[in-house]
Image (cartoon, rainbow, N blue to C red):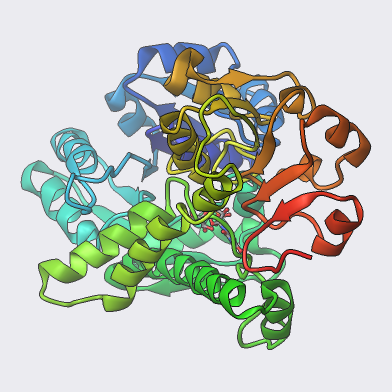
Length: 435
Ligand code: UDX
């Protein structure tokens, strides 16, 4: 099939590349000329495992191309994916200016039947709004389909090529047939293509992300409670997770969820409820608890140093909001850095992928190292903010000889408490007792 993808952010780029990998001809459109030039030269503008291999292969095969010309994209594609940003409009709601701006141009320009696919995370009712915006000036038939993405950063290529489910929101037989033809090759394993109306599809995305954020937040509260009553959240987590109704995944407590999706989507669903006088109490609590969760480790650090962090050096392992990404949006590490700097501490940080992004934000206010051990040399304590695999089995001997004293504050519960006690490390984690 011939496909145009409008917007080459995270979602658009993965979508375009993976659709090309499956034999489709894809033209990606972006207004950012520098980015388009870069991509034409074979440079992937984001870090996402395996994307570079697919990217090169499909450019070389001539199936993946780039342009800044929206009209060229609209001429080219039978299916037009909208993968445009929907940023926080300032009051928690999703701002649709980019989506509706492109919709207007589509209406003015297209002259033959197209399936317009909303891939961005958009509020319930957006497909209707996109439809009416296009229809205003449009002289031909078209359909608007809602097709939310469920890609996880770090696993996006795998999630796209082998999805657990595809959700299609459409009331048009013609568009459904096109979408099923497009996605059938990705679900040969038997995973479902679920067809529903547009509004239900739009809500499925918000409900899924909000539910997952709620699940994590619930465990964060259980962890905080464990800490107070002398229980161990690891044991509670395993005890709970073996009930198949609950499931083992997304029960890991920590210093809060972050990223580009959960914080934005939970707030947007809450706000959309408010707009129609529906009070999503549970979502309000999720937002509040998560904000609080980011703060729970700092007082432990501060009190260990008797409230005086001035001149102390804190080494940080992990800056990205989660492993396998360089994304630092809403990352709990940023809160910790701000608090430590505010208290007069020095910060030396290491992250396998996110240091460049953090350096852009903080300049020389914090230091970095070339590896995880270098940043611990001469530091007063180690703080762990992201659970990269490389941090899971450290060389304790080396770590202890590097640190001034063996102290670890772990916001991701990477190590068994007993093991750290044996190593003689003062170890504070989340929802577990100090041994
Ligand atoms: C999420 C959804 O999983 C994906 O389906 C959607 O399309 C986009 O949003 P992503 O933001 O990439 O994907 O990250 P995810 O792996 O879901 O993790 C989100 C946050 O939750 C991270 O900050 C992570 O550290 C945190 N988390 C996750 C926990 O704190 N505990 C857990 O048990 C799981």
